[in-house]
Length: 421
Image (cartoon, rainbow, N blue to C red; front, side, top):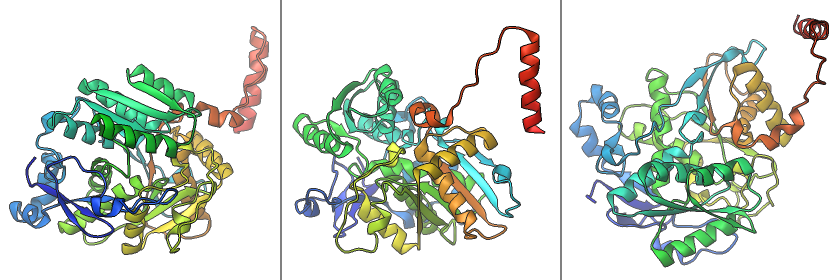
């Protein structure tokens, strides 16, 4: 690898070259304690001044777009990118999803349109491409489902091997995806954190490349691309708010980093307000931002993708929130399911509970009058509802079958029409 980028520890500030496999800062990780967020998470840093000098200021973003943001990615060539459509997901405007006249703009960034129906494909594609360029053929990850199915699918497209450790209680639809992509799946009788720790240990023993978020610094480099797309799709305007479903804090950090790089390059003049949305049953990131001693609440939420006891990217995401005055909100499982049903019925977008949490967070802000009239607000939808059908069964009530005759059908049709009138 070249000196295109370097790593910088978010805790001690130490610099490391970008030409070798490295996960956490060696100087900080030795002091990490069980049950606490790891210190030593690395931030990937580029020569932003050199990039600014290379392109005319008024054409900088357009030139970066033409190159698919390669100068801001830690790979040498786009030829190592999977032959799948990663990113470039739609941004839908739908103000009427809230029936009241609210006076502000609502946009849904639908990342369920990625190849494996998840935002995680952005990170998996980048990690896979880097591994391909560096002669690594086997990748490993721990996952509650989405990251695992994402890595499995991307590796299938790249003809790489993937090994996925999952909690045995992960949703069946996500486990099915992983197996259909041909990955080696290893269920673990334990939590995601247990699977995470095991994957880290075994990757060192066998020299596998570990994709784990908040461990592999390149995952954030894939995730930050969503911010570039939002800016472009809003016709080069910065949104006022971005609502982000939050567990470990990696997606949150990716959204922050993308907009931060636009700021460092002089492309934008201000940061959006980024809102971390957590489930009330798993609030361990937002509840600890202002505390010196990290305190864990045992997670219990229907939104499995953001159910985390120890948010492993705590220090980077908390640092971003403090630096750029980020905000947060927690939402109950009931609010998540109501938001999921409202989004499906009003916008035609069926998301998994973790993604619906972001919309529930926006609804919370709207009800409390915290969204000004005329503002632009983006809700990040990170995964398809088809990945976790079991979670919405309480919302489904199948009608009684009718007899196969026209009179029975007419009666039901009249009932339907009267309800909708």
